[in-house]
Length: 75
View 1 (cartoon, rainbow, N blue to C red):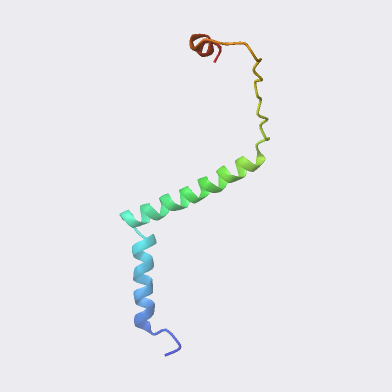
View 2 (view 1 turned 30 degrees about the vertical axis):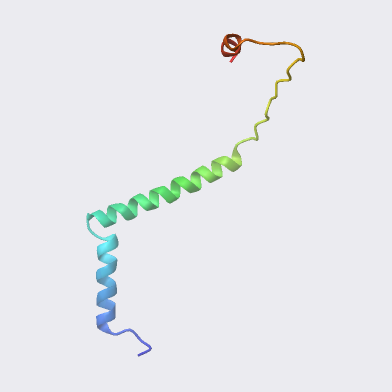
């Protein structure tokens, strides 16, 4: 009962072949998942390597009004 019998190994091999073998839809999905994980890891490492961006603020002057058309032109 503690060890796996021949039937268990055959079932396990069949599941592995279904998931990873051949050119079936499931193997394509597993490949897409692997590509997604690699892309995610690459994106995370790119974020860490990118320099931090400073946020610039624009101070408004009291008493100065700007029309909405001037705001869109300045934008």
